[in-house]
Length: 244
Length: 245
Image (cartoon, rainbow over all chains, first blue to last red; front, side, top):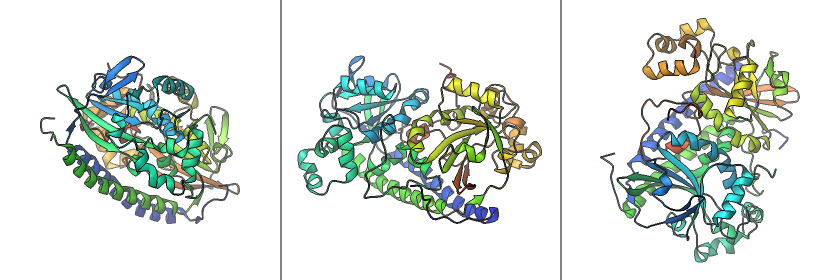
C-alpha cells in the first residue's frame, strides 16, 4: 500500500463515457442477480428430520425454537471450535456487520443468529468482548454443522494439511489459539430454514465464494480506486476490530 | 407458500449444485465489473468545497483524514426533511459501522454526506447510534456538481421524478410522511455512493453509483435474497427505532 495502483487521469467527458460502458455491465449484473434470487427460491425445501439441540443463553432449544416466532431463520456458522480461544477473525469481521441487521430482519419475519461448536460460555464471553448483541448458540454435538458441510473430519482434511498451508490459515489459526488442523475443522457458512406448520425445512446453504457478499467491506473496497489490494502470498489483512 | 416444492436432500443438492454454477458465474461477472471500475479515469476535482463537519469546516481533501481514498454514501436527508433521513438510507447506514474500522485499515475513509445542516445530522447520528463521520453538504455546490442532489428546476425537468411527485404511489406517500417533507423536495436528494482518491495533494473523483443499483441498498437485502419467501413488492422501510410493533 501507499503506492496507488496504475491509473489514468482523464477529463469529465472521458470518465462519463467509460462510466456509461460500466453501467451496462452493472445493469447486467443486477439482472442476473435478480434471476439468482428467483432461482434460490425455487430450490426444494428439505424437511429437517433430526432433532438438533442448542445451548443458548436462555437454556436448551430446538431448531424450531430458534425462529423466535418468525417463519424464516438465517444461521451464520461462525468458526469457533472447541479448541479455539477466540473466534475466527474473518467471521468476526462478518459478524460486525451482521449484528446491526437483526432488528431489521426480525421486522421482516426473519431471525438471524450465530452458531458455533465451542461451549456457550466461550461464545458469550467473546461476544461481550466484541460488543455484539446478536444471539449466539452453541451446537450440542457436531451434527448440525456436519450436516451442512461446515465440520470436517481428520480424514477429509488430510490432503489439505499435508500440503503447504496457506499463510492466511496459519495466521488465523494462531489468532484463534489453535493449530491449522484445529482451525480448519470448522467451516464458515450460512444455512437458511423455513418453519411451516410446525415443520422446519432447510432451504439454502452457502459457503466459500457464495458467502463473499457477507463481507460487506469487500463490496465497499470494490468501489474504491485501490480495491482489495490483496496478494495470494501474503497473509490476509483482516483482524478482529479491536486488534488492528 | 402453498406452491412450495418439498424435496429430498438429493433433489435439493442437485438443484443447489446447478445454482452454484450460476452463483460462480455471477461472481465472475462481478469481478469483471470491478476490474472495469478500476479502469475508469480519475478526474481531478478543481473546485474548492468547504463542508460543515462534526469538527468544524473541512475541505474535500481534509475529509480523507490522512488516508488516500474516500468512500462516501449520500444519505437522502435534505434541508426540508423535518423528521429525519430517508428510512431506507438509514437502514443502509446501520450497516456501515461494522465495516468502518476494517476499511480504515485499508487506507479508506468511510463517511456519509447529507444536505441537511450539520446540527441536524449530528442529532440524527446520535439518535441512530452511528459512529461514521457525517458531513453536511448544506449550502455547497458539491451535491449538485456530483449528481447527488437536484435543484428544484432540474427535478421538474426529469419526467420520472415529475411523475412520482404528481402521482405518487401509496408507499411513496408514506415515505414522504416518514421524512416530513413534500415529495417535490424529498425526491431531490439522490441515494448513492461516491469515491475519491487523493494523490500528491490533488483530489480525484473516481466513481459514482446511484440507485437503483442493488449496491445502493441496506446490507440485509443480501440476506433477504437468500431467504425462502419473497419480500413484498413494495416493502415499507422503517428506521430501527420506529418499527410499528
